[in-house]
Image (cartoon, rainbow, N blue to C red; front, side, top):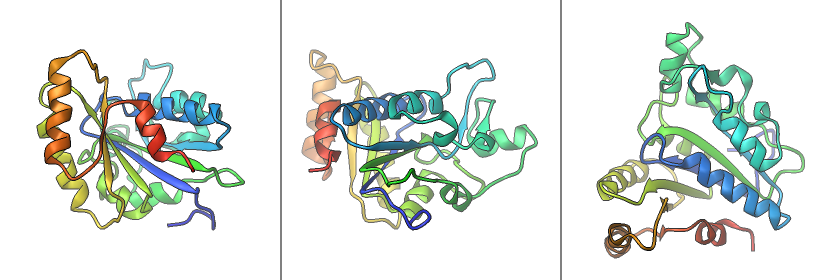
Length: 220
């Protein structure tokens, strides 16, 4: 899918095995590191929900990392100040429902198109993102070059990763997902064993550092 005839040179969709898993943290780190190398970047979060007391949302953190405005990252009418999945938050706030196509059509990239652009989803891969779909639906519409699946490195992550990959691979898209173990501690035996098991048993890349992810997505 193109956006006003434009598409970033490399489009990355960031999804997670669940909420509070570190999608925004990892994306922001990648944005800052790419910018430090002189690479043009942009970030978009099609919809976000948050606590009404939150002064800084995901859009603020991503905008700070990408050098953009929070309203560029996430259109202001897609800010939902209640901590629920976006379509549920819209309903609770008596605001209009929306579709995945609505969210995708609202993504606008700067001119000229950035070298690397990120679209960060909300919640886990099967969490409702719109009235008619989830992160898998968004991936199918956007057809990104890379899908980053952010996961925890600790207990329970193998099950969460396998279930999330099954969902991602069920979609009609061509990008091979890359697993990113967030908060990986090389001194933690469980973290290392989880990474080794996943590397041995899965047919996808399993990365455990932002530097490794950067090497994967940076333009060559």
